[in-house]
Length: 216
Image (cartoon, rainbow, N blue to C red; front, side, top):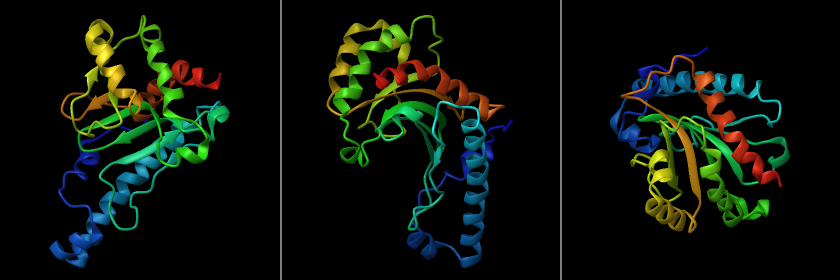
């Protein structure tokens, strides 16, 4: 059981993530301290996701992205989960922590998707299943957005999507040009997460019926 603390958010409270730029602003000792802070939080992040992965027998081992890409510190931490049956496909369940929120979401990973032999159009057919999937489900803190939405913009609440058919139609049209994302959020300034593993696991299990439709 791992509590999500404000300290885990605060490492991302900076304007600069480039090592080159950081070296212009800080001493070697200060940079070493910054790196240590990022790595400490990342180690917790990695352990949380490995703990979750161990409880998901239908899934391949979780992929936890590194805390740096070599040139930059990450401005968020990310992990991806894929069903064993869809391990070589583009759709996955992503989990991300940034300065604003923790989120668990279904997505189409465009990066290297041409090598996987599937298309966003096939994935986007799931949009028609969302109203059925959402029946009898608590929709608070669930949101929809499309690939071109910026990370920190406010997304469309799932409840609004379900009840406003004009917005639903408009969203489907825009998302159809790229791909949609659907996820559960915990916000830094509003939501208390005492058990990160449980939060992530719940999000994955709730998304699973929708995700599994891609097996057909």
